[in-house]
Amino acid sequence: MVHIVINGCENVDVQGVRIIAAGNSPNTDGIHVQLSKNVNIIKCSIKTGDDCISIGPGTKNLWVEQVTCGPGHGISIGSLAKDLKEEGVQNITVKKTIFLGTQNGLRIKS
Image 1 (cartoon, rainbow, N blue to C red):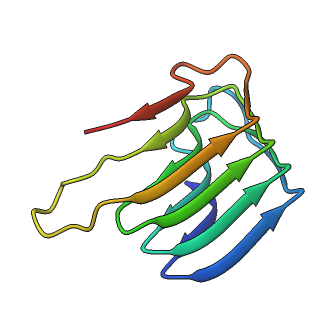
Image 2: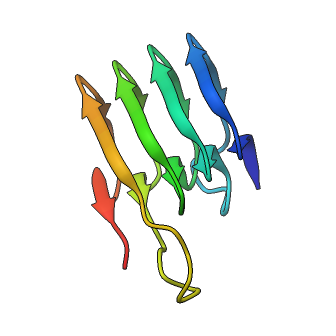
């Protein structure tokens, strides 16, 4: 379902990672981040059938730069608020990222 999960972590650097899954493979998120802070995802290539990077509740200070993303859904923030007491996300930065053949590019799911 997910290649890399960053859950409940602090001060994580993911750099130079290459993730490949078939473009028609469902639920194959490349990197999922939730309940974590100070995470950097830099110079990665993520080709999956779902989200390149999925950003879940409780994510704070996420920096995404120079990522090549696609095919798939792109980078997704959400689905948030499944639970009324769920934490939101704060300070998400995406820079110099290339979306190739994605359905959405960068999206916020609510």
